[in-house]
Image (cartoon, rainbow, N blue to C red; front, side, top):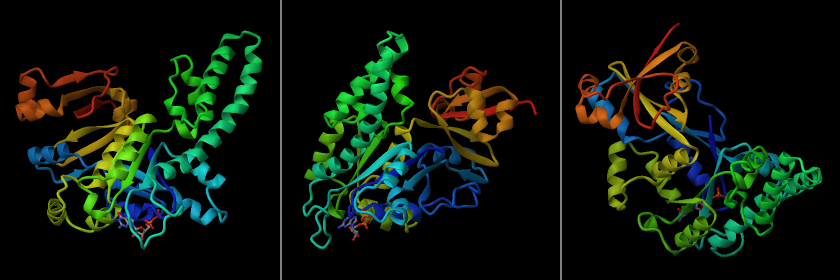
Amino acid sequence: PLTAGIVGLPNVGKSTLFNAITKSQVEAANYPFATIDPNVGVVEVPDHRLDQLTEMYQPKKTIPTTFEFTDIAGIVKGASKGEGLGNKFLANIREVDAICHVVRCFNDGNITHVSGKIDPSDDIDTINLELILADLDSVSKRYEKAAKMAKSKNHEAVVEAQALAKVKEALENSQPARTVDLTEEEEPFIKHMFLLTMKPVLYVANVQEEDAATGNDYVEIVRDIANQENAEVVVVSAKIEEELASLDDDDKAMFLEDLGMEQSGLDVLIQRAYTLLGLETFFTAGEPEVRAWTFKRGMKAPQAAGVIHSDFERGFIRAETVSFDDLMEYGSTQAAKEHGKYRSEGKDYVVQDGDVMLFRFNV
Ligand code: GDP
């Protein structure tokens, strides 16, 4: 499964956030395959549509879909004793599909900041610089080869050299690779390099409890940076999330209301990271079970069926499909059918977020 890695400087709240994540881990009974790596936290993806489907079907069981976070700091701790960010750190980032970069946006005199003052912009630069330098190293090497080959006027080599030159220039100007505009032809040459600064980034602005609902000036600094480099921002108070994670749903709702918050920051983080990775949800719904399933945006019906079981993909015939909105509007699949909204889709159908599906297949 795709995973988002949690990174950040020391003392910014990574462990606190990861604690909140592991405290809200899914029940192993529903996910026997869930990883038991202590550096991985598997959380449910909050989705109000699942609640509405549960109300409609009154199933015996409701199963949300899940999402994985990896605590990169935790992995690094055991392995590298050296100061600062080692190769191990970079290697671990290379393995995740998106980066959740925790930035300290809270004042607390008792907690030392590594560079002595709260400065989100400087913190972000520190981490980004490591990533940029690592990428620059790979891109420069590759560029020299490609530039040599491009002398032969071989079209592919020319395009590759051109793409690499663009990325190299950005990196030399301290800009991440994901800010570079590449043509459709250039893109594959860069994509297969798995650059660290090509990965989507979500800045997690960790604020003190009283700023959780409103944000603060530090958060605005983070937002400005994110805007410039094609990244996103989520405001979280790791402390609050840690407390919320040990409450049941009713207490959680009350606590959030007291704080003037509509949703837990962690829930928002999960949803945003999920979307950032190009993940979407389809549902299966019946009396025994209502369940949410994750698929990659753009997947066709047989591949989506394969998310449930490989037999479903292999023997795929068609998918009875109704959108969540249509199902809610008409109140039942039968009524949706009468309005022509319950469709029988074939193998070329591109599954849409929110589709409620029933797969027909040969065994
Ligand atoms: P890490 O080194 O990035 O993993 O940081 P920790 O999660 O260990 O947090 C460092 C310290 O900051 C701990 O004492 C936390 O309790 C504290 N801390 C983390 N998040 C918050 C927060 O939102 N508000 C306040 N006041 N303290 C926090």
